[in-house]
Image (cartoon, rainbow, N blue to C red; front, side, top):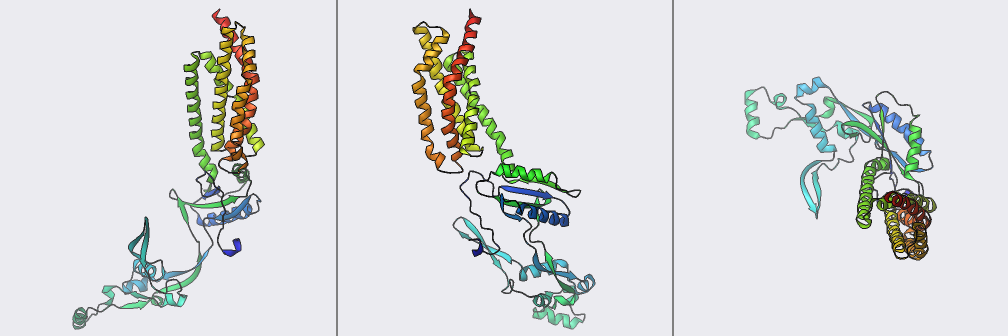
Length: 398
């Protein structure tokens, strides 16, 4: 497919929740354009040798064959021609044209431009022969009678070829010079190969950049997915803290005891093991949807913990058992509903696990594997923790 579109970058992208256009970006900042061009080309060559990267390119694009007009200031001033006159004439004749109107296609605006027919196919000789209107002061006749006749006709528009006061020199120019926050910036961009983690690849590049020798005044900035994660991670962490706080107050309202609420909140750390195993077994990256899966695991643990602790308190009161025997009986009798709850949650996300979606697969793996592993902790560690913590609490009351 790549050979069908010469000099074009063909990118096939999977559905992703990420808003970044390019996953890997290395930005070079400097006032020296020559240094930017040299070191960006060196970085592009190095990154192209990395098998994890594809479509490595620079924002400067390829050099373009252009012409440079060197104006003789003395000759131009005699003719009353300024640099601005030449720029306007050349932009109209050989540039993108002048915008004269705007046409609308539904909600999209299209600029209507006026330009000459040979704007895209002019030669160097055409540029030399281009007629430039001369200034009025240089064009007016000195004889009074001739001046009156010119004024009556109204058709006097003298002009001279560009070659009479300027030199046209062929040269190579940069295809694009980008700026970011007012500074010259060259961005080296790359796509990541399939089944490669963007975060791991970016870290490998950052390790190499630590040894990359740069001239004085040049800075390196990491963009792409790495920069986007730096902005979104604090928001995700804040939302996670808020959700934990809400869970705590709901538990406090339910149990009417700070000790039991705090115990379940501490037991939420058991979800970390389930989440880690889900990510490792599923081979998925840590993403936003993986964090959502972690929050779902916390909800499952809290629900099963409430079932277990409530039943233990009920058994202790009705059957007059000790705290240790009560939680033991509760774990035995509540094993089946806890297993069914965890198994239902785990099996319900199997299509997400095997669907292979880059968006939903992390969440499915965390819930599928994490729910089963967390269920084991609920039936083993949480009863022992309840016995130890609540036993001390009762001794303090006595």
